[in-house]
Amino acid sequence: MKKTIVGITIVGKDREGIVAAFTNFVFQKGGNIEKVNQNVIKGLFGMYLEASFVKKLDLKKFDLELQREAKKQKMEVDTHHETNSQKNIAVFVTKEPHCLQKILAEKSKIKGKISVIVGTEKTLASIAKKAKIPFVAVEERNQEEAEAHLISICKKYDVDVIALARYMRILTPNFVWRYPNRIINIHPSLLPAFPGALAYAQAFERGTKIIGVTSHYVTENLDQGPIIFQDSFTVDPNDSLEKIKEKGQKLEASTLLKALKLHLENKLEVRWRKVHIKPK
Image (cartoon, rainbow, N blue to C red):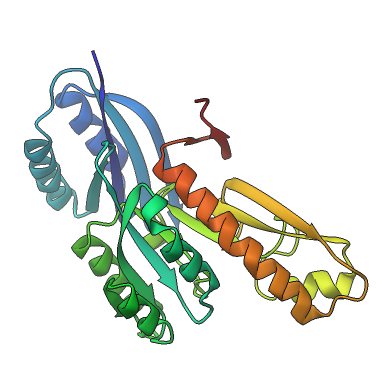
């Protein structure tokens, strides 16, 4: 019999008994724990719990009862059900358009719907308007306020996966933990080399002969999430920094798109911090 898989994310103030409360809830509903991952940073508790059910599960009733438990435990809880239905995609952007343009150009070949484009400013709003996709600017300077706005947007558009298309703002655990292995970033270097900002400039200054890009899932640790796909190009000794950036941006766009497609086709699985591509 086919199993129903339900992913549950729990985020809130750390205190004793949270893990037991939600694992017991799953057991009481006849479920089995497939995966569990928890973390605590500066008093913030986050847990991802994946449960399987052999018997037919009333998902609406399950979600309603889970929210009652969440209210009782004073935690924020969300569920994610893996289905064959079309997934909703949010694309987060800042100023650079190349990754967004590539995704939009290939949207008919993506197994998902681009439901919303979110910007840290309004620079790329006209591209979203031309594509007839809602654009929301999250311009709050305060990180907590900005992420509260992001969370409300993602809930409004029922977002399943997030593509960071050269999104130049760090996301904290309070946001990242809500979308485990569902936020995909593109970084302009062959990680773990040259993490952080100005990766091309660092590579140029070091005189590297090969420069690349890395698509990876986002975790609470900056640029250290499980690597999905990497690609590279050779550097001519006469290449200027601008020429290197130009070459890199083309590769960034295609690599992010490839990772997003693989994710939406359910071809990726994360085991022990490594991404495995499922066999056909």
